[in-house]
Image (cartoon, rainbow, N blue to C red; front, side, top):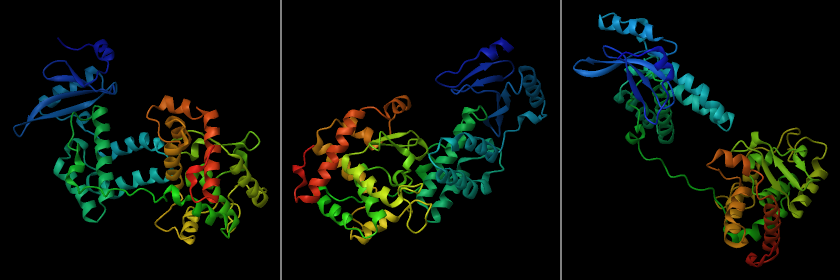
Length: 387
């Protein structure tokens, strides 16, 4: 039985891709993503190959039959042509890049393809590219000493082939598990962070720091345990509830969702000191060296170096310190702590809902943490801090 236009229109995606046969070898392939393409299998040099005539509805049932008849007669019609790797990769980038967290990451993803892949296989129809060629591409990157970059290139090549397969342009592809031909990635060391027992000495050193905006910024980083980029660009307009709450806008958050940071009494006092210095400026952490700009990205790290903490503590390390103490000593529920750390939520709907969840408990948590830091600063044993 041959296909009808109505049957083609009615074909729905399933868990796995499937075929709907027409006649004399022509069939409609429906991908799990809902893409529909006209295909036929044939023998090429004794091996089975697949010819693609185009995607439905761009190519109608009648046009697919005509193209298939021409191909069986030895005439290869224009609709058989499959787009080049670069064409498909740019279509994938158009969808992928807006989902990435920041402009720097977007540039890196596009640049790895531009630099390492397009010059070698970019102009080739994607269905003519074979596994050994892909191995050569990624291993060439690795030979330059860029093992991590080679892994990223392999992953992005595979993503482009996946996109082509889901679009119905190819039935299978040679890029799966491409990373197995590469050396293992170096294990990323966690950001250096002091043990809780050393927190008192660090807080005393920060309090005595000679540049006031940087010193106060480090204190606020310790009290809020946010990411450095989130703090650096803090603006006066982001404070709510008479300064008792700081709301970080979505565009500055790793998860692209607003983040609510209740400010302890101590944190509010630190902000008050910064207000005396920078109240007339846009940024709370306005740079003394470049007015109108926030402190530079490495200011806090270099300040910790000056204080003698090179290799022992980083600006990001305040998050690890807070997480350790809060989970081990505070008694607050793990979910409450995770919400305040703004860690990744696997369920996107739940993440959007939870950005301000547990707010009363989080206010208590932040005050408990501030008092723990104060006790650490005045005591050799901060474990006796109480909420």
